[in-house]
Amino acid sequence: MRRIRVQVQYACGRADFPAPYLFTRWVQNAAQHLPGSGTLEVTVRIVGARESAELNRRYRQRQGPTNVLSFSYDVPPGVGLPLLADIVLCAPCTIEEADALGIAPEAHWAHLVVHGTLHVLGLDHDDPAEAATMEGLEGEILTQLGYPHP
Image (tube, rainbow, N blue to C red; front, side, top):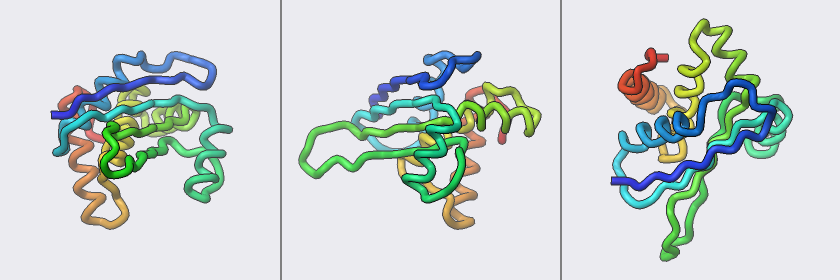
């Protein structure tokens, strides 16, 4: 079983964002669905469009802000550190997408955190089979958390 520590940073004007305990709950629930042990330390950072766009450009070579970015850090073999990860959520993108999709903002925040957590734990959606696996697991986790399947 994993030990999970979550830190939440609100790096843009706070405007009715979910409480830190919700981000922690979402990360913990997603992480418990994948095999593994040891400690997972995650920083969830809520940013504005400018910071999201800069990170998206720097690390993905894409223009403009994006809803979620995930970063995991490789710990050198033999170094007894936990798995370290950052999940960066763009507040304006998240809120706009929830509105466009007609879903509760909290449900969309939860979806993006679950999605980002699955990424830092090694899942991806680069090919159709991987995408189907990841999307199915996201739906299962969100349903267990009480949110609609995305």
